[in-house]
Length: 236
Length: 236
Image (cartoon, rainbow over all chains, first blue to last red; front, side, top):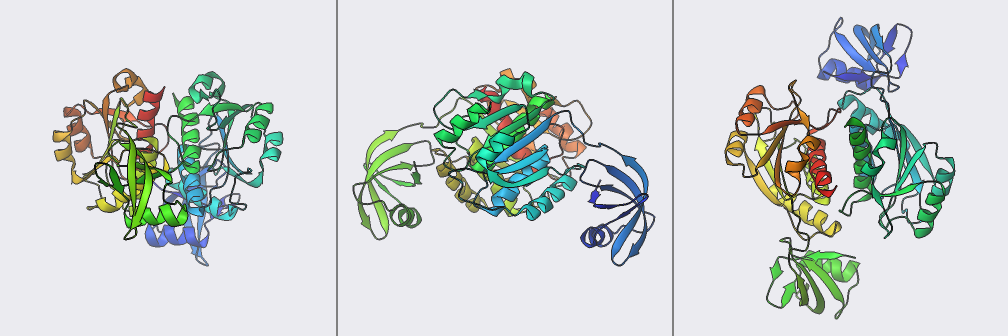
């Protein structure tokens, strides 16, 4: 089974872009009249049939549309300090999409070393991971903002912050009743952790301190582990 | 805090190799008489003091030795089909060491495309991840063997196999009483999954079928998720 991605979806027709068309026709050797499945990254899956191949672009007639194909009852938002290595950021995007994520924000903290993020490249990574894992939705990816602006504007009701300071930090499992079928946001800090000021300020905005276990994790690993835990708690 | 690694440990003295010595002296600007922490990858942490710098190698006098520094009550063994991309194998090693793993085996299944694994490079990756996460133990990494040989010789009492076939597959959480403080082994198959024959044969050797959740995961992600779940169940 294979999903194609397109953002050119019309009433009865889908057009694949040049890269997707090449993959469809040259690599997978699909022919006119073959059935294909296309997702739009917004939760819709289309079953269609190839009708032509014009200007190196594959044209598909829509036979069926499944709305909200991979809709879930819970919502996962991870707000993470960008890592210095773009590869490690892309890896975080790939793995969190595989596990299931709805929204990713980048936050600039006092100890964040990287000030910019290549959002376009991250969307490409997210699309590949979505297709690979047979999903129909690309997460929303928000460009970097200052942590204080993020705290003020966070929309999710259940809010958690992972840090390593010596204070009472609970396991996410102790919040499981709140987490199940709800909207959850977790903050993940930079290498070197959040500052005490940032932790105190987050608590004013109802972010609860949590621990991700006994190991000291890299930032991108902490992001993936946080995403995995929210999914496990909702899957159980 | 920073750990150095050495496999040249004598009665009262440690010698760092050229790379570790350069990192110690040029990057971290340590000087003679400075205190340093060294791990041997076999569970021992040494506190010491730099005494000299001969032939580009840093000599350290041992002040204290902590045996079994990161010993845990549980044992995690993941047996995984190697992935085609060496990068993705190295990523699996890095992340499983960060989360905590004791033994990694590579298994050649019917649908495994990669027939060899560069074990030396994987040990290097494991050493970097061990130091990064302030651990003292490198996992045992076993070279690739045929799945049937692995099934016959597996030493762990609790045995699980993750696959995607339509049969009764339980969550790892349903085995939590067995898993806690015990020796556990999980089999992770190739892209394209284990064959029915392999699954049936594993069940003869008491491997219980499990599911890792509702998402279709890449092989290396499944390996990390399996390792994370065993750690969570033991940490709870």
